Length: 178
Image 1 (cartoon, one colour):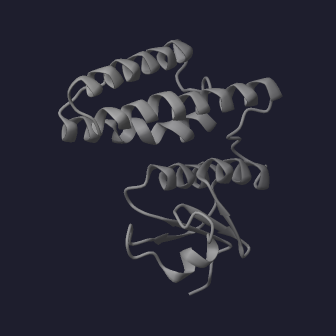
Image 2 (cartoon, rainbow, N blue to C red):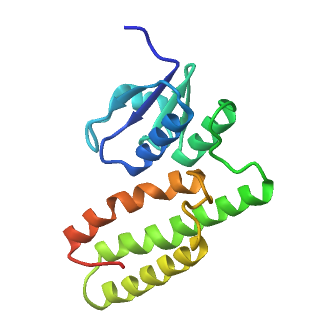
Image 3 (cartoon, rainbow, N blue to C red):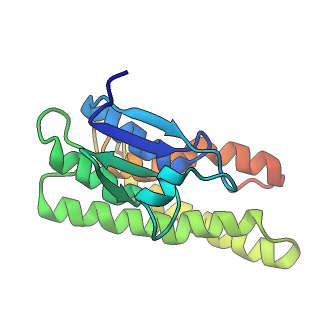
């Protein structure tokens, strides 16, 4: 079997790997997917490719590995410039996309995970924080079909996986964020 130019190490239940897969698919890039057996049986190849964080996802392009999914999305967009554009072209819009991604990571994801890992009064407090964060994010995208406007872009990839998994989190925890 011929080895592909791009190899993605991920795991079926990883939203971070999913966002990189979506970027590769939007750009029409063929890749080989390596499903890692996590968390306790990481492959030697994964550990060799990412000796610093030792986690997925890792993308390898022409033998060069990269870690951190958001870095990978920008790399994919910068490397394969033709076709679909993931990042906004305008520098201000790019900065805004990065701002809202940081907000979503720091406020929405962090507080939501706090809801699912706490109980009682602590859970109620972080639940209120999560609801406020989502309300702020919702106001920022009101009137847009996607985070980036009229087409799928960086923020949709960066944060879309979370919306995909949210109903599962809510059902397991028996708590509704919305």
